[in-house]
Length: 340
Ligand SMILES: [Zn+2]
Image 1 (cartoon, rainbow, N blue to C red):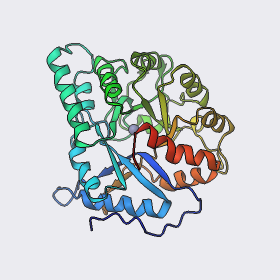
Image 2 (cartoon, helix red, strand yellow):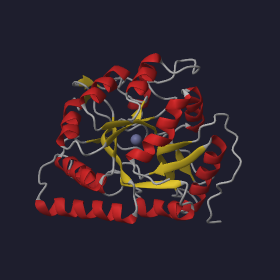
Image 3 (cartoon, protein in one colour):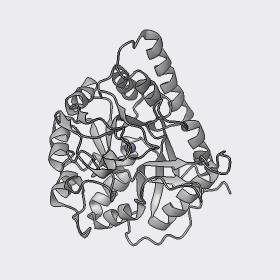
Image 4 (cartoon, rainbow, N blue to C red):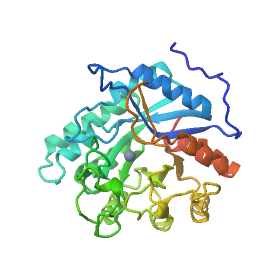
């Protein structure tokens, strides 16, 4: 134990291995009197990675807010990095900085002392060895009773400050934001109605997101979950327009069965990538990475979200070989400034 099983035989068909830049390991035990077992959740991840040809996963705390009962931070995730240094990279801030932003969601009372605390926490995250900041939420729907609704304007003063820190320290920021191009009514879907926490009316967030992008062009911002959007508004056309206007905008790709069909990247049959998405990835081939958003949990614990890893592997097999290299390996290395 403790060594990375780099020589493990893998079963994947495609020649290309890849990095998967947005995932979560969850070591909390919610039965049997609680406790935690981060080692087991890391081991579950390694087994799946070996099976599918995933060279590295990037793990981060989910975007926690004061509404979450069980919060963890980079410190817990770091156990996985210590055990398998070549197979994990960590991002931090979801359990601390995102919490601070949502604790002060209205953006008032952001004084110098709060900003100073925020900056100190951000610096500590990077000094520990995190390769970026994540996961943050600007608009996050509650999809079940354990899942909070979170909403903060993407140009919140602490998001602007985070962009300045990220630019200075040359690390990316990973943001979760359902797309709302203009004010709209919450779509009437079962998954959005389940917990009763999501508001009926949604305020436009794309204009404020563009202000965040323009605030500091040195900040690389990864808008997580391209291909998965519960408002149905994150189309390839919207992504194209934003990527054209904002050279510091990056996207990670998520393929999930519960996504709205009009924003999905694969055709209904799953046999091909939709032409508008493939064209977008080709035209902006330096700015896409994979981000499966898989939760790896302790064996025997309740699964969080559907299994998404196999679909990601399938997508990589459909992708032309040059884009597999770019999206799968070269882009994450460049964007996160990795040595290997
Ligand atoms: Zn997310």
